[in-house]
Image: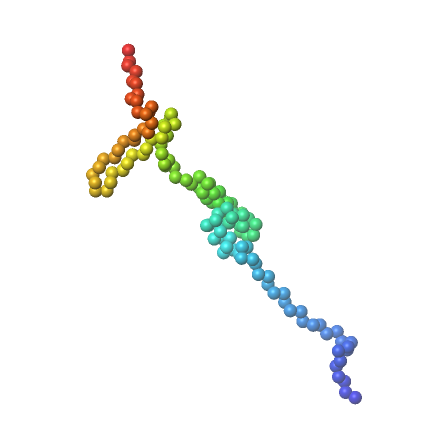
Length: 127
């Protein structure tokens, strides 16, 4: 009689267990995305930086300060030049017209737009 191994043999045979596959990080947690978001979309990047990276705290702090400056510049970043000047009486005054290129014209002074503002101011005489 020959000995043939059967499935139900009494030997303790270990089955090799495959190594677990490395889990892939989502794209929004990737270092490259967090860095780009911190540069171009600073407030979003700062949140991602604190939530998903293991960078030193001083880097996170510097990036957060940058994000705050970026956000403040974005909110208050409008032009500081008003489109029309308003006098104390609420009258709109047109802006001076710039000289045309090559025309040699001089700029026109600001002209009040309502009749009440066209009266000359009174000057008090010293006694």
